[in-house]
Image 1 (spheres, rainbow, N blue to C red):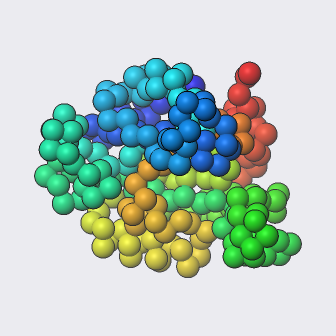
Image 2 (spheres, rainbow, N blue to C red):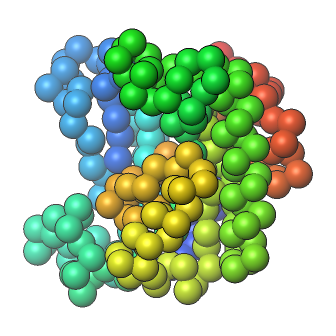
Length: 241
């Protein structure tokens, strides 16, 4: 993992951040002594920046590394008061949340494999084909361009399977839950986004430069111009081991 690049990604906005590790929920690969944590997000709230995650990653060997898009005034105070991070919106320690859009290929209605309900019935809910990947890639570009009409500080990230579009503008950071819900509902009518992510209900998102253990691909930010022809076997995403 490129800890320096990950730390730079997490350097804005100012405030303190929480991380989370997923051990083996989907892959079934994890150190057996931690089997009791397999399906439980392991919260890390004492890492000052991404570089401090290294001991945790070496110990737990997670299949996924996430960060909390919420930003907090003080994690020391949060621990002392027993703050429930899942219900932090009304806490005086809560400063805001990064706005993000999560597009996954399995959420696309495929002319070959059907919609997500059909895939779930066949136990293929996390599978996707090339057509679905190319369609969600097209949607990521279109969404990025549409968001650019309102905001100026955007980033698109290959998530290991699909794409994330992040908005870093200050006014987006300060959006209320109700405003985020309206944005999520509006864009979900035209894009295969996960409304829970955009509305703020799901606050965790994959940390760029970490490894997506389900598919053995590195999560990488991409220049907007690279996205239209991007492939999941791009050498930037393939780990060197």
